Length: 188
Length: 188
DNA sequence: TTGATTTCTTGATTAAAATCAACCCTTTCT
DNA sequence: AGAAAGGGTTGATTTTAATCAAGAAATCAA
Image (cartoon, rainbow over all chains, first blue to last red; front, side):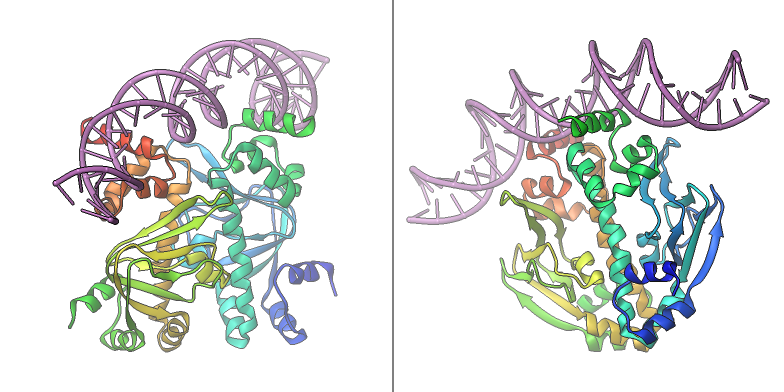
């Protein structure tokens, strides 16, 4: 069995052999080049990606043309705009490859077909919802130190994969503040 | 046709006569007394309420025993913890009546039965998701003025229904700051 | 109705993080 | 190689809203 698919399984829930086979049959596999878009603002997010290689950035552009990073994605992450996906509404975000990527793709229709075959696939809803939770933490009023600690603890790979100014934007703090937090963190 | 049900319909989506009838058959109707809980922290939110009379408060208690208001509900609102409801996970919030309430109740099983009968009921997912969006706005880094303007514009009834300290907690600002924002707002 | 809470307002002070500014260090592009 | 651009650090300054404090107003309860 190939490692990519078992990686995906380990991030998708508990499934029987038959369910695993159903899932495998619905998956597509694609490669994307750096800068390519997985989701474009204004379109409905109708598929989810499981990153097998590469990294991607989910962001929004505000009225002042400023880019705000909403989420950062690395290998073994599920990638989607949960809000757009569940409400079937045009997304306010874009998702763009930061490096060349390869990913499994699961369309919303595929997910519905799977659920029709086994209720076990409801688990996917929970997994995909976790991305939304994670994002919300950084929106909330935690201190810069708490936010940084949370990334170190829960998503250390991000720190290796993206420049600090991306991390700062993701944490909704200024790059200067992140630099100082890191200073305190490394030699307390 | 009774006004309560047409209120609910106007907040639920576009449905055919037959669909309206299906919906009506699945609805329950209950009354609750002041202080009574619609949802208790740690339990899964498995039904949604449509408030016909009264008001309710959704909140979380933090480590320091402080109560933080997550959402405020008035007549014609859908009431639920969207996160718990969609992920089928224990809720971190409680929802408590602030006055005596009456409400329609729709269980998650009822919603699944409805969807099985007509895809039109997928609309409910979108409607119920809007509560989650609304909440997120106040988590985000907007200025106290912007947050207050947003309530005045989108949810003016809250200002009549709850004390200012509740509104302040909902907006995630201090009561003093809210008082000053209001001062500026009323005589600019 | 009157005393006791609770809520609201207003001013003064403090604290936290953003912004501004200068400089250094890489990396990238001709 | 050299210029340019992007990213990171550090210090000084400014801004914003929280906190602290005191008093006024409103609500509740006996």
